[in-house]
Length: 173
Image (cartoon, rainbow, N blue to C red; front, top):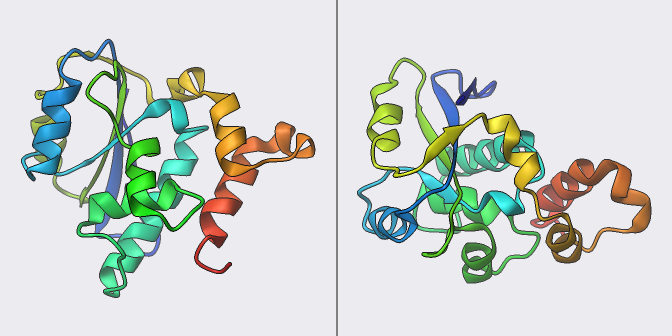
């Protein structure tokens, strides 16, 4: 159900993804995350093409956090910000964070590799049905993603590649 990957560059830490549908307490989760009661990034799964996209955003956030170059206030807000193709932080939260009315949520947690209790603590706070993380692609709003990332028709076959490239180069352009 959940997906946990060890960071190659930071082997002492892992990233865990949890996907839920039929969520009834999105507003409560969002409020708790904003107050720091949930240590995780709450992502709108309709804006995610593939779990790999999450790994890219999380890896970049952990790297920037370690070298002290984050542009947001926390590691988890940096993960949400890293999904955006632009440098507008508030726009990133609107597009990629959850809203009070959302019925699905992808939760991204960064934790020491040996510690898993943090994952369980967050899971019990969600009033919804956990589903396999790989199912996130079934929730993808392809039209919105193509519009946001300004992809070309040639990139339709490799949308994940186009999205990840735009995420990676936003700091360069």
